[in-house]
Image (spheres, protein in one colour):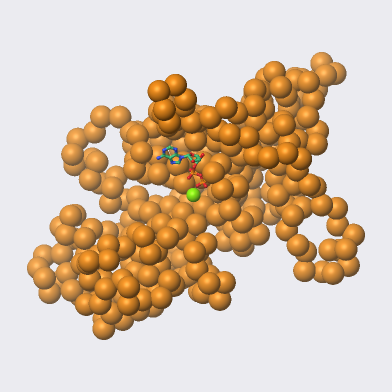
Length: 332
Ligand SMILES: Nc1ncnc2c1ncn2[C@@H]1O[C@H](COP(=O)(O)OP(=O)(O)O)[C@@H](O)[C@H]1O
Ligand SMILES: [Mg+2]
């Protein structure tokens, strides 16, 4: 896909989200992350648990206030001072689907009221008849039906609850949806159904997705481009095929080498990159490149200098000294 000509929906610039964990310690959950999201695409965001994926999503959508950096939505700054009307409009356009469909639905509300909450807030229905009709339509859209409207979340399976979460997000007619590991909590047999539903909705409604997952093999199939995070940093971002076929960052290479290949012959001869050591703490990350303590290619410079986030090839971004041209010219 020729992303170069495509229109940007969202620009994330040097975004930081730090949490104060006690009087002295600061946890840098997201630390200087920059990327764009194009209209109509699915951008996959992957990385081990705790690397900052959810915090990135939540900060973009303003569930968290950014510590630093900017998020532009159609060129407009999402953070910073806004009129109540502007805020409301951002809240409508950007929706989130959460990982845990059990925790994200209010158990004391009927499905109808859960789905209609946004409709009410944004006054999208003229009267209760129209409100009901909208809810029924949304239920059909996500593969449920109007008989489900007056029931409570506990009466549904995990997959059905996630469909309710999707209906709730769609109710306000958003442009952009962050799906934060929407299928991780579901049975494997249900996962494909929910992914297929999301893909169908994207096509029908021209939605843009930020799709968060910890599993690289899963996002490949659905993402136009994929970004890889490690310990609060984005380490690589490229078109899906390119990222999978020619990963540049040693961390991406290691993640990919852990995915089994269906062809048994290839699988047998395949080399697996085993990462040394444990994941460091984001409260006290390594100096320079955060990945260097586990990197099979670590050099002296990696401990001293944080690698720049750079476009190594057209549309292929990486933060790694192996691709630092000036540095390589100097001959290390
Ligand atoms: N509200 C919070 N307060 C303090 N630390 C947090 C908070 N939310 C997340 N963190 C920490 O930030 C880091 C990134 O978390 P998260 O964004 O949830 O990672 P991921 O979604 O990739 O698993 C983790 O170390 C996590 O413990
Ligand atoms: Mg998460």
